[in-house]
Length: 167
Image 1 (cartoon, helix red, strand yellow):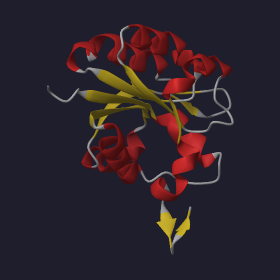
Image 2 (tube, rainbow, N blue to C red; image 1 turned 90 degrees about the vertical axis):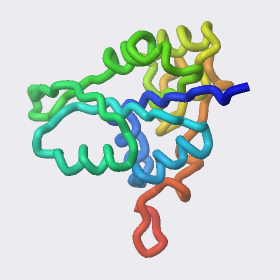
Image 3 (cartoon, rainbow, N blue to C red; image 1 turned 120 degrees about the horizontal axis):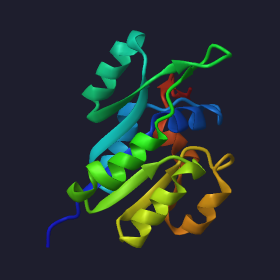
């Protein structure tokens, strides 16, 4: 029997802000290896708002074997860049890439993806939901407790380290 094809669909903003709110910085290269080694993720789609000045970051993420899916950004009233990727992530997981994978790993603690979790679960395609910060995860995820993996338990493995200390 062939090994199932596993794709990861990553809410980059939720991932980045979720770990930073716990006082550490994610090493995206280590995280990509973690997805490959622990969940056998062959394709990791990283959904991210596009800001022209971050070209070097996008190049680096691509070199780590992420496939970047960009969303145009806008400036909010308080001068913050906004690029809400929820619709794109759902569209890719439930339609555009749906026939290409057997199992999905969703990286987000956001309750806005409840319909996607339910959709994938009903079709036996949900492998895991990786929660960047279990202290701020949506209460809607309680239904999917069997799928949850909390990243804060992987801090020592996945954090950027300088001088042996986690950033």
